[in-house]
Image (cartoon, rainbow, N blue to C red; front, side, top):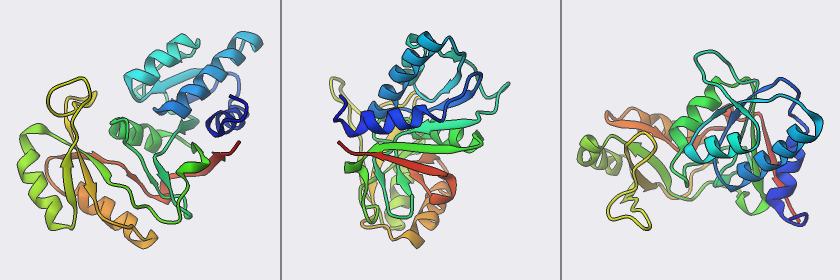
Length: 219
């Protein structure tokens, strides 16, 4: 693991955590490594850390590692640690490969500082992968047509080991929307245009204005 970029990014992010801190906890494999390292520190140093998880995956990983679960009603996270599927040269991100981008964006917006941890393979000059869009099932047909009107090629995400579409933690569909290469100046506009479509819950574009720091690990 020591030669693994995800591990090295997670290890560096661990230095940002202080005793008594409330964390926004993202989702994904790099975040899970971070939580395992944090759990070891909690056990060895006898510190207390509180967390607002964004998915069932991060919820159970947080509990397993001794993090005390809280919510946004009572707490404003001081720090949000999350992963990403792509990060461009300006720190714009695409997230949602694991389908948790709505809760991830809520927690990121609610946090005082947002730090993205990735291995170096996620770094690109410009964003180019399909953008995940969470959609209320009833609105699927309408939203699909509107997304095509703003230039997206659309694919309804289907599950593995399950017949039919992926269902998010909130009970919705995910449309993977290919907008081609997203220049920096397009990111915020496309994110806004998607959100203006009635029936869209959220999307996986995280503009650079949301991100305070990116930690990219290499071997």
